[in-house]
Length: 208
Ligand SMILES: Cc1cc2nc3c(=O)[nH]c(=O)nc-3n(C[C@H](O)[C@H](O)[C@H](O)COP(=O)(O)O)c2cc1C
Image (cartoon, rainbow, N blue to C red; front, top):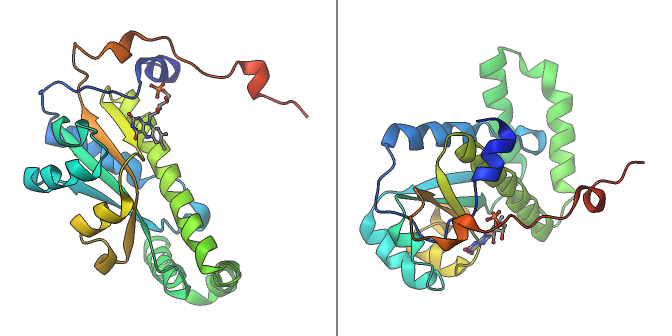
């Protein structure tokens, strides 16, 4: 599929079939999501693959009746970090030094610049920034899934606080951002045949 064919094929699936996705395919999709771009490359979020059916059963009542939280093949939660600060930069710098084999002296100014940029934000702005980065990962995941012919439904229609509690996210320094049901569309899902509704090109693009 070309990217246009994949994006025309994908839609937010409302009803999934009972068919399970192969585990390897899901891992490939997670790997694609891991490669998402993020501000400074700091990736202030985690991806949670909810493997326990029991946990998914407990999440269902916190999902405003969205049955796909339980019925889809797989469920992913993207969660933003709740504590953003110098340590966020430090762990990135450590990783960068290892991966690119550069000494700290070469990147110390860059590290200070990132720390200052983060320190200039209020706690609320830091949290919002982390959610924004998690949303970019969500977009990467959805596009990758489409190219891989994996059906998906992104969701923010759920009780964040209840999800955080059920998944024990606070103690991990995380808060839920969005969730994604994955699997194969059901033949009964009437949404599949609906025409896409998007703003027209002329209403979308401004050439300056
Ligand atoms: C951040 C985000 C949150 C969404 N939340 C929900 C949701 O809670 N439940 C749902 O059924 N669809 C949800 N959607 C799907 C949108 O309704 C859908 O993407 C939009 O109507 C465009 O349709 P299409 O994706 O099928 O082309 C969400 C989409 C995004 C990007």
